[in-house]
Amino acid sequence: MVRLQLQQYRSQLLTAARAFVRNNVVHLALSETMSNAAPMLAPRLPERFHGTSLLTSLSLEACDSIDSLPDSIGELTALTAVTLISALARLTALSLHACPGLTRLPNGVDALAALETLDLSSCGSLKTLPETIGGLSSLTALDLTECHSVRRLPDSTGDLAALTTLELLDCGRLRALPNSIGNLAALRTLDLHSCASLRVLPDAIAQLPPLTALDLGGCSSLQSLPAGIRALRQLRALGLAAMDARGLLPRFRCAAALTSLDLQAVDAARFPAERIGALTALRSLDLSFSQLAALPQRMCTLAALTDLDMCACARVARLPEALGELRALTALRLMRCAALTQLPDSVGALRALTELNLHECRALTRLPGSIAQLAALQRVDLGNCWALRRIPDVLARVAQGSDIYAVVYAT
Image (cartoon, rainbow, N blue to C red; front, side, top):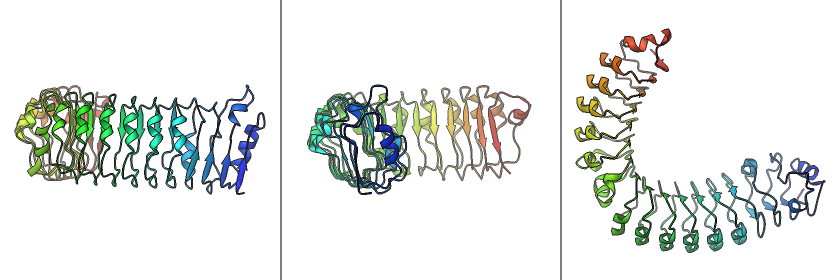
């Protein structure tokens, strides 16, 4: 079947919809169908889109009673166009996640006056957004994660006055942000992780003082930061994975107020060792995949730190005795630290620790007896710790009803 048109149906709607999902239609029009549905029928699309692998065009014009679209719309892998013009006036959330054939949205998308969230993630063929996107006055979240073909955002993006979250993760061809981004007065989260073609940030970013989370990790082409970056005094979460953290971190005047810092895959030469101790408010620090050979002593003065992730820090052979000074630490993740041979005795001073993950630390030969002092410990993972000779008694008692939640141990 090439085209199926269901206009002005009432009680026949659901029967017709069920019939459509059993056919390989190419174009589906449900214009005015939902708005004319009988009152006793909940206005909705079918939950599943089985048998519609050829569908390239979906029209929902004037279906003004629909308030949601089913998750299964993502099964329409051949979909290239969705017509929503002057339709779906009550729609608050629209997800077109993983529609790889989708190349564009209609210019009339601004008619979705109630829309609050728009998820276009993993729409790999989508190249840009319509200029009318700025008409979505209620939009609070826009997700373009893994939209690999997007090279630019329209200037009208700056008209999204209610926008609080803008996700551009892994938009690898995105080269620049519009200056109008400075008009997004409500923006709290800006995720640019792995935007590898992004060369500069606009000076207008200084006009976003309410911004609390910024991720620049993996922006490998980013040459410098605008001077106005210092104006982001409310910033609490910062991502600099695989970046020159040593050179970039001082540009942020708010650094001392940061509560979360992502330094994944940062090499030793670009690690901000001399500044890390000044981050006195820091609660979460991610050093996964970093090239550090040792944990800087200054890090052990971070009194507020609760979460330390050092997954796959392949060169770290031991941790400093000063580790025990991290009295607020609740989670210590050291999985796949291939060179780690032992933990310091001071680990017993981490009285708040609830999670200790040593999974696949294949060189680990012993655990200190002081681990018995960790009264709050709930989970220990020793999976694939093949060189470990013995487990301290406090861990061995797991089978006898100790307070430890789980021990995974393989020989």
